[in-house]
Image (cartoon, rainbow, N blue to C red; front, side, top):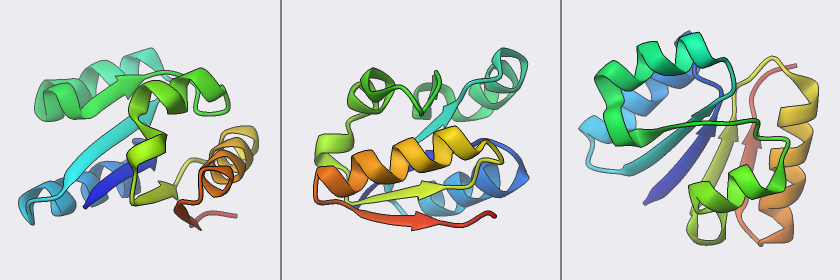
Length: 98
């Protein structure tokens, strides 16, 4: 299963680890450069730098082939945009933070 996770805080990073350990393909999207570089040291090519509220970032992450999109970011615009985009592609999505 291919999963895109928007947000690389504790929840997103740990979720990515769990899914990768279980053999799933994962792309984590983070727009904070410092956090992105920290996460990239461990997850390498499984993390992308960018603002998930931008459609081109989701497209680059492969939203058209994603089985699931999970938004765990605290940023409302990124949550909303990623969920709307995933639904427009007919993908299952989960909104996990208020």
